[in-house]
Length: 258
Image (cartoon, rainbow, N blue to C red; front, side):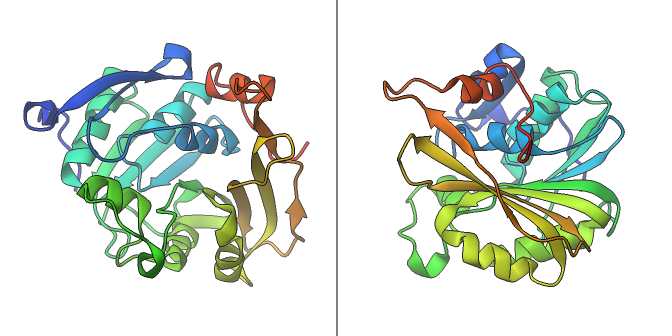
């Protein structure tokens, strides 16, 4: 269902007003539950969207990735899918507050029972920041919203990938951010259905093992897999690296291969 941004969620949910991309994006988000960090910003930077591309943001939350992509790529159209009604309404409010109503929208619904506005094969790009933890292996947070963002529910990682590939056009591109230790699950779900896969590690610092990866794949492609150089996020003193700062604060694109 489409979301009415005139319903003020802040009347019943405690929120904070924050910014992304050095202030270019305004974001209202709940004080409790999932709080936006760097993952959706990096995800949006990696999506190779063009000016007229249609993009689906699965599990869009309060709209952080959608808003960052729209701020970087003028002309692209983004639809967010979010199953939590209050969070979906916050996303709609954020779209309105950033004056992106002509290019961004959010629908409330579950990827296991997609709402009617989402037509299979209608998107050039799909991006997703799925829950990182399998339910059987996770100690869920007592805060419901935080647990929903971090731990898989009825929809497994394979379900997220299935839905993304259904929504993509042939040769369309899927871009995801996930835990490095779930790479095997990601590749298994894509096997025989997408190719040209790029695995892009996000190194916390020089010489430190990657905990996060970006993964990009092209639907229907048979091209081989590429392990990219990746991105070092922090210098030895803890400050952002120059490349990370360009992405996180200045809205620079993050091509996964040069």
